[in-house]
Length: 282
Image 1 (cartoon, rainbow, N blue to C red):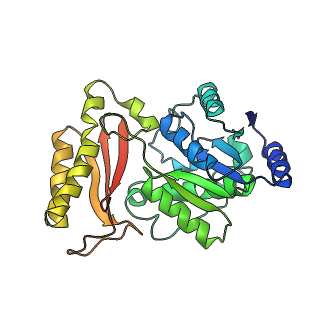
Image 2 (cartoon, one colour):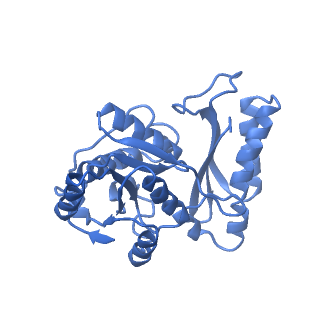
């Protein structure tokens, strides 16, 4: 596996692969890779001949009080893991490579509606940063298929909407959430958890499963959501939301709807803000 820092060098390699008839798969990441990320590479491998992974901690998707400066950066470890999982090329651009006119003066890609609720409401500008950098990466890599994790479900929907609306000829694949033994979704931010916080974090997946089970008994959506908030708070976390939405677009379902729904949680434990979700029809 070769590592590229300049977009032109990566482009030359990808062009050579294309001339040889290869199908290109792409996995964009912010690094600090774990088994969840590597599962995206493995899924991409089933649909492409050559795999490109990017590692770029994108400043435009972090808010002013978020963890951009302290976000873990582990490039040597990431390179070793990707090579072991048969990634063919790693793209590690600098900020000025991705934002040649400066991040503040960059052209922005916005996705109305779906990017303005839940995470978008709590983290203003976050999905504009995500959509912008992913569009740039798509233009540089020119993949046939790109893989995103289902743990970041709202992000997945934003990218799908953006790709379709901009008529980008890229297939977007969703990779199943990878979990620890106790159900906690794998995340780079899990390492912020200290001591008992890590044990208490398992309440997130337990609460999602309880939301699913309660819904099947006929309880109202409002009651299920209220119980979820109570369970999260009782475990010492501070929930931003525990909600049930339509899986297709995250709109609010009607009181009697029971099909095509997803439960989503965002909660804080110590320094960590963790998100997770569960499709309720599965």
